[in-house]
Amino acid sequence: MTVTVTYITHSGFLVEWEDCYMLFDYYKGPLPTLAAEKKLLVFVSHSHPDHFSPAILTQFTAQRETEYIISTEAKSAVRRAMREAGLAMDQREICFLPTWADGAFSDGAGDSVQVYALRSTDAGAAFFLEYKGKSLYHAGDLHWWSWPGEPEEENQQMIADYKQELEYLRGRHIHLAFDPLDPRQEGDMCLGMDYLLSIADIDHLFPMHTWEEYDVAQRFLSEAKHLTAKTVFHPLERPGRSWAIEL
Image (cartoon, rainbow, N blue to C red; front, top):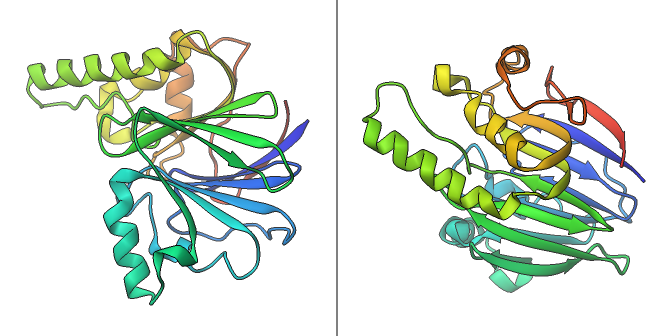
């Protein structure tokens, strides 16, 4: 099957399948034209303003069937946004998914979308999806957040928490993966993504959370220890870039 992946900005991606769209962590930027007959599944990993915009609750629903899968961490932000828009909660199809829980959703054409929420090392959740025999991972802010200048004890605890959470992905075949590559981490920037590659079998890997510093991809390519020919790494170049991918 062929899917189309479009980079929106930051950690925002649109994945188009034959029967639905999946939109992850959208907070700004133009979207491609969406076919009105396809259902839209909107994922929100957490409420940080670079991952969630209240506009998602109003800008899609008049045109198509839309369902929201949102980390419970963002429940207060969503409720507030709905009140400010003059909407009742039952006017939107929203599932607040707790971490370490799974849910079954529909693509609108009869096929199931299975979603599991991992616990983030920062806020909210990461999402692991299984759909039509394929799997997708969007990390949100689940990441190896070690920082230069921070106490060593705190950094080591962060690393341990990250590795423990990623045990859920160990040995899995992931067809599409979206994972942070944050230049603010300086020398530790590549460690989280490289660790993900060491435990999972990934076909297509997209960096995100790069703060639009697109040269980080070349640094990752030069430093990664576990990136092999079996994984296609997709550097980001500009918002709006799309890839047609055969899975």
